[in-house]
Length: 266
Image 1 (cartoon, rainbow, N blue to C red):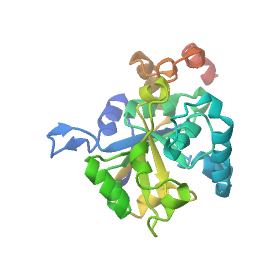
Image 2 (image 1 turned 180 degrees about the vertical axis):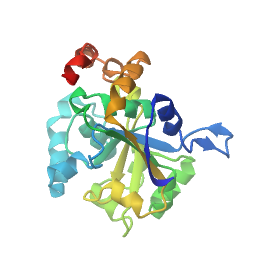
Image 3 (image 1 turned 90 degrees about the vertical axis):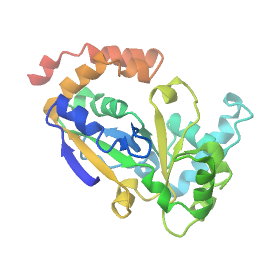
């Protein structure tokens, strides 16, 4: 799969295409090597919050001040830059990180969570994170090989670089990294979350994969299919109440769950 765009024709067809290329011959198991990101509008780009801020040079200042002013609320043992970066992203600070999930159903949730976008086609991006390892700098490649892993943790990244500029200087060519955030709270765990990060914060991962030997595909969720997808996800217990544990998630779920779709057709 290299850049294919597949239009979901029905709920049944969607189940089939969500798990394309998931057979792992080496393991003889259906173990997908893809991560997924759901977009409410198929025209949206894979921009990070830092990209949308338009001021990537402010990254170090944002992170430095986030660390400075949050010290009383964070454990003193929380020292790794990469843990801090994940924490900052989790709480809404503009960063170079982009949220992904191992779960195609969680990605579907984010494609259909906003009923004000139901007149627009949605999209799911899927990128093969194992393929991206081939383009890592030698030091990072050695660490991930030693661990026998396909995705980094904050601790693994800390062994290679202790700063964002240091990361970018590890290789002349741009590269992508996927890493699992620490289990900050149940939201991270329930969303089966993964982050991507580019060595160059100005580069979109969607542009990078197009020019490298990395498998990826996109699934279009037509507007007319969104309500069916949404209702069946709710019946499968994939909703804000589960993915955003707490009263805010509960209230958001109830607000959407009791929305009268007949109003949308008037």
